[in-house]
Length: 416
Image (cartoon, rainbow, N blue to C red; front, side):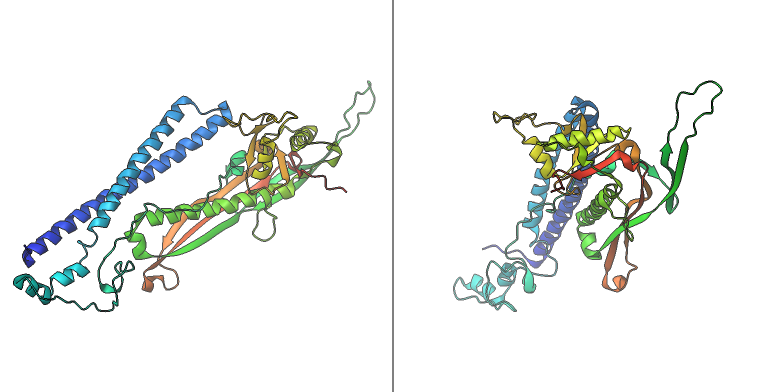
């Protein structure tokens, strides 16, 4: 048998450590490319959404770019798997200061004597280990016996697509409150009048409305070393932190009750559906058309419909007497539109309820502070424990100018 000298083994380890460092640099390059690809996909996905809204389909140029981004992502994922597998294979060889079980055995006097004589017994005592099993993966100070297979990336929970804010006028403010004057009454007495006769008087009344800026925030605590060793982890936490803000924001804009630090949302300020418009035998599709009519009677024009995903699925699955779907081609699906209006399906809307309204002109979201993420060691005992606190927050206000232009109600008749 041919065994390496201590000097040769040292050179080999130095070479292996250099290889591992090169692999780690390559891993970082791949992760950076994946993150950039994800940002590009998000940008063009938003563009595709606008094109669907404006043109009823994704334009060819955008579709070509999205297809190319998806294909490039598959190549980067393969490259990521390859680099991580190389790092996994080299993990034990590059472990500084800790010898693997095999290295401890071959470096022992018993094994060296056996190698010289060609016969005998070689023994090795394993400290703190009673047996070598599949659980021996690097714990207890004995090195790495079996390397686990690391699945790349982080498996995250479901993401809700946020769309309510996209329906509403955007705005910004540098104050902590928004004030606006809203017409509260209009008695129109205009009429044809004969010559020299007194003209009728009409009356207008106004009210001053104030809506205050609210803060939505939360925080995480993490190990400083872990964030430094796994760059992907901080970007992942940042992303989930912003997602948490937007999740609550959507619920607040739609259904906040206005108490305490809650926004006063669209549903509490909306006009209840006029049950006198409901007819016997009305389907959910019929009721939406009648709600649109109610908005029109109030002299507004509805711009969108908000539904729970379960109710939207019921409408898409509606069939005629022959069993054929009324308006959806099951091979291609259907555009999320009903009665010429875009449909937003979100779990923020309670099942069995609907809202129709002139979202584009009847309400406005004012951003005082955009959603942001900050990291600090100056929190509690973070400094002494090498911990960091990651805080995400945003500040915003919601102004509903024309409550009459929003109609909210249940699909089922609430009267007995």
